[in-house]
Length: 47
Image 1 (tube, rainbow, N blue to C red):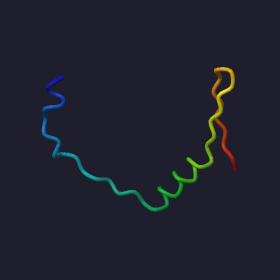
Image 2: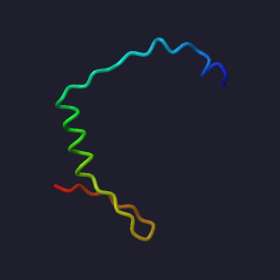
Image 3: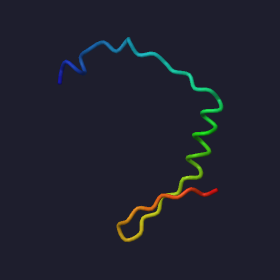
């Protein structure tokens, strides 16, 4: 486990997302609605 966290992490690079992708993800997260009823989870989209 020490080997995993002791390595130098300078290899990481930033990824830039297009504005269209960010807009899509924000709209998707706003429309998603999760309901829990008697231990059952329902996922629905509000359009």
